[in-house]
Length: 136
View (cartoon, rainbow, N blue to C red):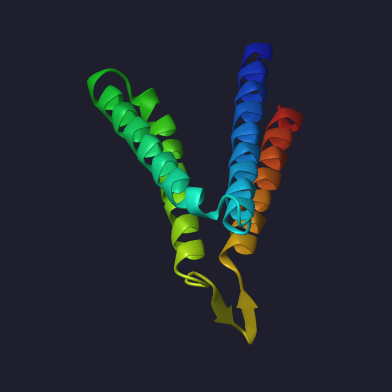
């Protein structure tokens, strides 16, 4: 693997890690907003605006991917994922414990499970990048 390939791999890993940490921070801020009496009424509109903006960005990237190059499909999927995740957070907090579930005799909360999944994805991705650098 050339130095240029390693630099591209590391720079992409830094962008992905920052995106995952940003998503985690945003989800935490949404959760705190829903449990704060001063901001709970605004969170309904904030989650709608975030979802719609992310959806519009995803559609724009899909159009660019179809018209220009296929490299625009990856940011489209990230943006669509953010729109879906924000919508799921909105459903979770506005329906009451709507997305919480019970399995194996234990109750799992949507927010906690989603944070665990994001942390696991971050650790796996960083481990993969380190493995690729060490291997080559």
